[in-house]
Length: 28
Image (cartoon, rainbow, N blue to C red):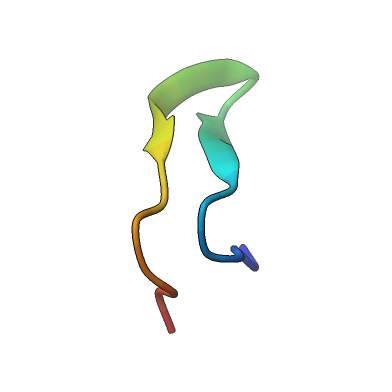
């Protein structure tokens, strides 16, 4: 999963959302 700073994100696993939120800094 690639994320950019300030971008909203949703982690999907098995067709359901297991996590969601907003990126406050770049996660590598």
